[in-house]
Length: 189
Image (cartoon, rainbow, N blue to C red):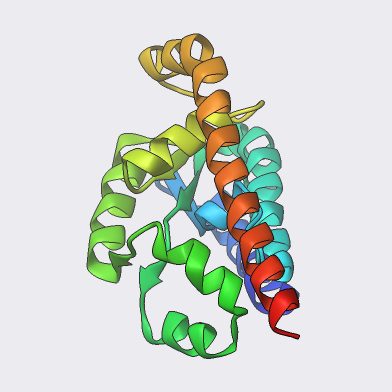
């Protein structure tokens, strides 16, 4: 997972950057990294996956600073569960608790994620969440991520505390699901 999700992205960027830096047309260029909402908040059963997707965020934040001089813009996309053949395979192997947690958040079609991604890249957004709940998570976890929109920066500052509180409520709900599941399975043993 580290080789594909993190190092795969790193190696593609490493190979493409010399060409992007030496391009004759010095207009803006873009690099987009596909993370996940699991790259903003860890999810039970997704330890390795979340780690690789969190790593992409660090890569994007650092490269955004390093590549400004070359007029190369970074975007990082944070979709929820996306209905692909890969998620179907993952569901077969994921823990039952993870399935229960993921059922509380509906998935998106890959085409929807693609459209939102293209719109976000064209608008010059660094962070591209895919739904309202993703926007809330993005605000709650904005940290030191770049923000080009004064309006969004203001919203992040004003509502960060509120969204952090909502995120904690959701996290506590997740812990409740885990506790109930473990308790019911210990009783059965």
